[in-house]
Image (cartoon, rainbow, N blue to C red; front, side):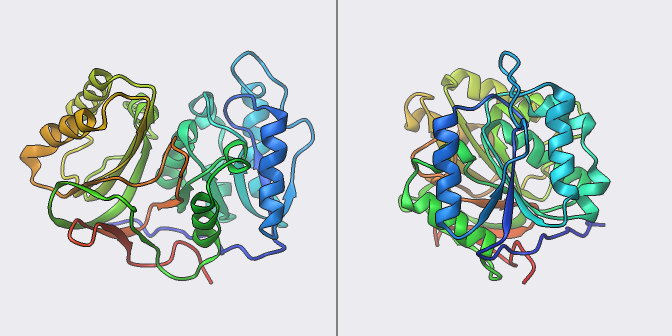
Length: 303
């Protein structure tokens, strides 16, 4: 039986968005630009005291990063949470997260890259819709498409219709499923943990950066041998920035999923490219290659 997904309330201008730093350290200039972009949209921001206390490649010690995130979810005045940056570190705090708290105090939660680990954990453990979209440090100098998509995704009470400008049909077809996925390398590293979902009946979304084609191939095979792709309904490809020739990546994906006869649609402006549209994770949509679109069946937030 499918677990009922929990939705956060949609955001409105004037709402307070809290900032978490569950992964790597961030540059202050980029951070301030991102905060300014959020404020320009009409939101207020809450930056916790001592948000960043860098330790090498981490924004702060594990316990501190987890406590900041837990505390933000517990604050009734905070309506949404955006992560400062990806990098690395999210999986280190997965065992320190209060998933019952997240479930009982649902909020818009948003980020990408390494934050995919938290998105996966939150959707599997708290059964809460989460959003794959820009981090604070990318939001300040990103495209108007990214900002518009983010704002629409977190404020709309209507189902989203996400249609890439340059859709690429890798395998034709139409399929329905729960949208799930994110950064491929991060999701691959979750294998064997309680936070790695099965993608049975799901539309699997993936993107990556700086991974050679053979590494993309290797990660996909590792995931398939783990059994997590059994019964996957369809595949959505975002950007594969600095991963080599796009044609090669598409060929790898086509060959890998070819015997499954499922729709595969590429060209989505999500991930580490200039455009990074916001994609809700954890709710049902239809992937239709004739339309060249990912069409949600319901709103990602409550009115």
